[in-house]
Length: 148
Image (cartoon, rainbow, N blue to C red; front, side, top):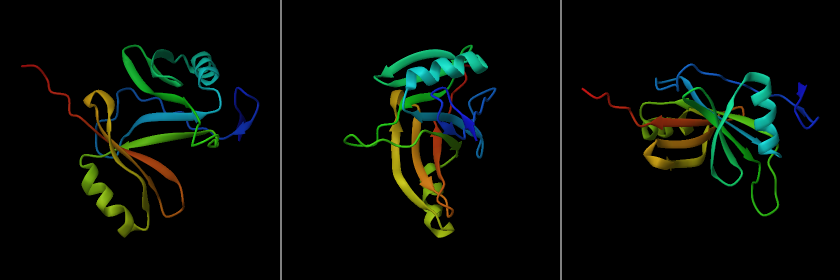
């Protein structure tokens, strides 16, 4: 355990990937849900050199390095006035999201957020819970086509 920028105890996972994980089983996008997205962005920018890459919606900050976008940091709102505990959510890359989700329950897990589109035609994501109760994201990214 460590203390985050707000002084609260937290365990956190920082995954810096050289390229967005586009291979089955890679860790790709990572998101931090926290009580102070702007403060978290400032903390991690100073700590590991991440750069702000934009705020596509209020309270959701994209971070990256150089020309890469690595993840997002958002305020931890869950519902009407309810807050989630601050946490990191890694997304595991899969080749076929529907086929992967079809296996989850048979392996003892459950789907806690069904597949949804990533904005700007980036692919699709879902969130699952493994048999131990750990939530993890799954992502099927659009394959980038190379120009001939």
